Image (cartoon, rainbow, N blue to C red; front, top):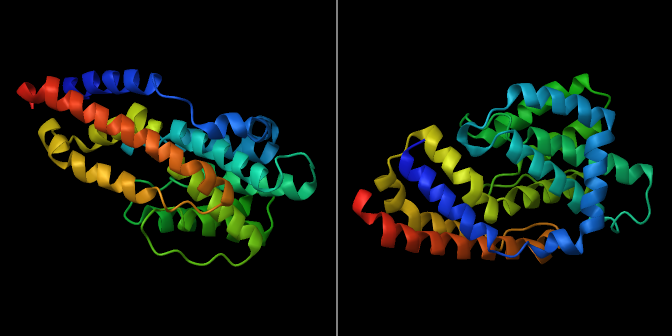
Length: 252
């Protein structure tokens, strides 16, 4: 990684550490705990996690760390949407299993063009080897195919598929908040070998994308809490931009 990016990442992490934790993690703490426990104990998720760990790298900023965060938050969103886990039944467990499968696999083809559709095709083939119904495989694959922002969405076939779709999308877009500045953009810049001067020139346009994502959340829980993630990300982004202009202009 370019030494300038190493310094900027360190400054960004300091800015992030001073920001408040998004309210989602406080208000939905029980749902988050439910999702974490399921992620750690479900045998299907454990098997898929082993596969993903061997295949995913941190290239392009969407490796295992990103996938795990999306998976845990997607599971928590499903639990929150279904009443917060106060009534546990097989339907809830199945819904969390399916959305966590989608979370683990959503960026499995990240370096390919149209990675969401390529990832959906990959998931369709892979998950036939798992103890999942054909309907579940379709629903998981559909959600993966629909997880990109600002792209055409293929309407989910069922209400269950719609829940997986919405919660996967929202958990992925939560990462456009603080995580964008602690991890994602630096890994993407390193992978693409983008010169710092080019990064700074395009920085304001990237901030416009953050503004646009704020109104795209799909689940009721995502619409309630997602905008705050983005607002925190926007604040971090502009504070970092001030640092860049004030302290790094001579080396760019």
